Length: 491
Image 1 (cartoon, rainbow, N blue to C red):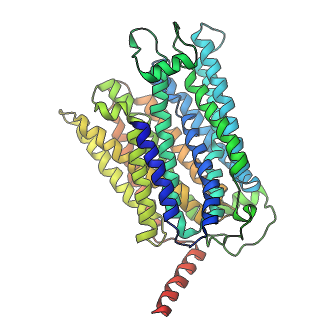
Image 2 (tube, rainbow, N blue to C red; image 1 turned 30 degrees about the horizontal axis):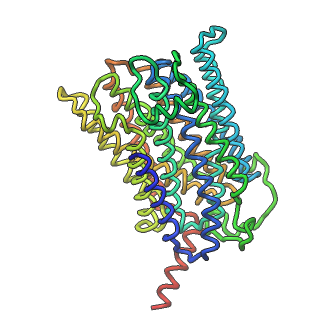
């Protein structure tokens, strides 16, 4: 049933892409652009599976919540710091090469982590598992940092600014599918390789047992949660190599003027790393987007990575949400990203901040409901589950429209990867921050700190969204004025 829902969502995404053509591109252009963004997006979705698979070790109690937080916290910190290198690099070499490097690097280090776990579970005592996983997960995250910025780099050349709200929705959808792969597929693999009384018979378990010759095993082959995502990434890297083109002119089409911050800039020389970084870090708008993204990192991973652990510790879970957490997170994230992208282009003249502000208000209300449910004696499980899903919906809306769209608008084609890297870096700093803080303060008896910690970040994000409410790149504003003038003349 889950696979049917996912296939329906993919079909809807593809259909919407071909129906939404405000710039009246030719069919040939639409198809060639599809062959560039779809493989790129699917590769990024499977990178999520190679990123959040670590959490399954905590739910399987191979590592503790605190150890999981240590490994993830350092990994996200490395991801954030590396974007000052990977952003300018992708602006030089292009998104295609960047995504291939990302998928190959993440695949290699997932294989190494899987092998380390295999040795540990087979009794090897020659190394500290947590330290080894921290090291190689951090290296995995270094290459993971190439993924989002490579996606946005390619998008910045193929999509006009008036189409980017829709692409932000598509980007958010692919992120949401990645969450589904990361949580539900990883948990399905973990369940299928269990041994002893905890093992449950299923068709997928039979398939896994036969595929990997696990019959009669006395040790759960949970290392497959690293090997299988690595295999997917190697396949998609090959597809990317064959299909992706960095820009329309590389695919034989005329250069597309996108009317973003790079509009009218025909300079083809390579800028120095220092000049690229300086231009982005002195851009107050990019920095304010970065702060909003910091709050989105806190809220996204502060809910996505902790809800199931909350249910496990407290028993306050809705079974359908708990066992289909990845699918629910994907569906709500898709709804949030599509509403954000559609509303941005439809009601706010391609301004991104108003939509982000509305999402922050929704998250504030949801965290308030969570606090009420925990602090009252009723401990309403339904309120907790629905509130968590509302946050997932809103935060993916923020992330897709700010990191996936606004950064390309204000960074322009030439600086798209670096601008996205700064915003995504702030987001991963938020993810790292919440891992270290919640990992240190959350025990079975202190879950009331969870929503209390999250709430202030919704207000911080709302403040900066308000500050950016009216902002547009000058070229975009000029283009919109010309469009309105043309409409008036027609009348």
